[in-house]
Length: 170
Length: 412
Image 1 (spheres, rainbow over the protein chains, first blue to last red):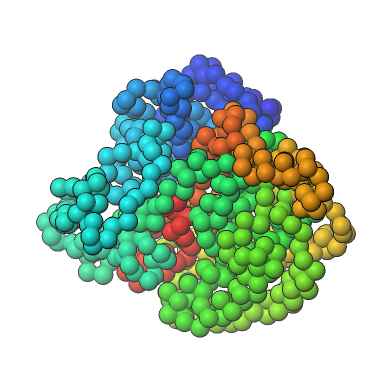
Image 2 (cartoon, chains in turn cyan, purple):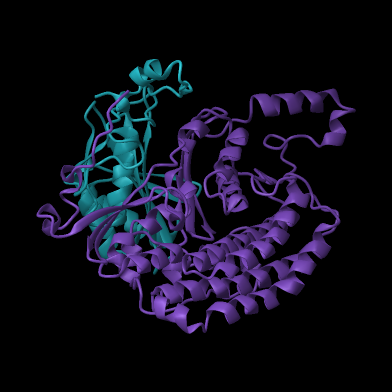
C-alpha cells in the first residue's frame, strides 16, 4: 500500500478502531455505522479528501451477515489518493447516519441507496425515493427482489395488469 | 383504472420556500417532455415572476435497472449493458467497465490494444462534445450549430462503424483488449478527420465565441465555484471550468495516457461561458491525442490486440476450425464465462462528462455480485438548484445545456 495512504488508514484505526483489507492496491476500511460521519469529516478536513466519488451499497443476502455494506469511495485531489470506507449494517430496518451534511453529493447518492436497498439514512434532509416511481414499496437491488419482467399492458388486459402494479393502486 | 394523484405541496414542502405555501410564488413543472431538458428530466420550478427561487430536479424517468440486469449476466455479457448508460460516450463506458474487469481478474492488455483504445476513446470524446455543442447551440437558438456538429459527428460514427460494425452501441473494447484489429481504411479515415476538423472548430468559434448575443446570455450566468462543485461531486469539464485542475487522464494515467502530450484546459470563472470554452478547447486537445495515437499505432504493426491469457480471452476464430479444444473453449467461454475473485474494486476513468467510476464486486463465480456505475451526470445535475437560483428561466436552459447531462447516464 502507498506510504501516504498508510498514515491515513492508521489515523482511522487510532480514532475509530477500524479494520482494513487490501485488494489490488486499494484500501477498504471498515468503519462502524455510528462513526461514519466523524470518519468522513476527519478525512475531508484533515486529509483533504474533497470528493466523495461514489456512495453505494451491496447486499450479501442470504450468505452473509451483516447483510449490507454501504460503500463510500473517497478521492483526494490534493494528495491524489483514494480510500474506501465500508459500513456493515444488518437487520430488516438497516440504518446509517446521513453524510449529506459532510458532502452535498451524499444527498442524492443516499436517496439512491435508500431507493435501491432500503437502507435508511438517519437525519437525511430529503428522504424521498429518487429513481423508482413514487409509491413503490420494494427495493429493487436487494438480492431477494426478483429480476422479473413486466407484462405488456394492452386494452384487453388493462385492468388485470393494473392490479399487479403496486404504484398504481389507490 | 387508477386515479392520477395531483402533485401536492406536501411532498415538496421542505424543498420550496415558505412563500410557495401562501401562493406568493408559483410552482411550475418544466418537463419531462421539454426539448431543452436533453432527455426525460422533470424540473419543478419555484418562480417569482420569471426569476427562479428553486429548481428541484425529478429524475428516474429513464430508469431501466441496468445495474440489476448486469448482476444476472456473465462479465462478458454485462458489458453490452454499459453501452446503454451514457449513449453519447458508448466506447468510454466500455473502457471503464473492461478496465474494471481487467483489474478484478488481473489481466494484461497488449500495447497495440491500448493505443487503439486511446484513439477510439478520444474520437468518442470529440463526438460527445459535438453533441454537447450542437444541443447547446440549439438551446440558445443557434440552430445551425446543431446541423454543423452532427455533420462532423457523422465522420466519427463512420469510423466506429468500420471498426466494430456499429455506429453507437459498439461493445468494441473487450476485457483483455479490443474485439478485433482496426481495418485498413481506419487510418486514412482518421487522418481525413484530423485534417478537416480543426477548421471546423474554428468555424464553431466564429459562430459562437464572439457572438455578442450569445455572450450576453452566457457570461456571468450560473456561476459555480470550485468548492461547491467538489462537495457536490461535480467532475469533468464542468469542474475544470470552475478552476479545479483535475483530469484523471493526467492525475492517474491509464491505458498509457502518460505517453501523450496534451493539456488540460482549465478556466477560473465557473460560469456558463467558461464551461462552453473548456469544451471547445478539449476538441483541440483530444485531436492532438488522436494524432499522436496514430503515430504510435504505425510503430506497432501486426501485433496482438487482445491478451494472450486464454483464461479470460476467447480463442481466435482461425483456431476454432482446426482445434477441438479451441472449439470447446469457445463454447464454454461464451456460455459459462470466467470466474472472478470474491472481492471488490473501484476503477474510474475520465469520461467526456467527468469521473466515470465502476464499482465491481465478484463472488467467485462467472457473474458479478454487484456492479455500480458512478455516472458523472448524476452528480453534475445535483448542483443545478444551487447555480440557477436568482436567474431567469431562459438562463436555466443555458445552464442545463452547459453542464452537459445525459439522462441515460443519470437514471441508469
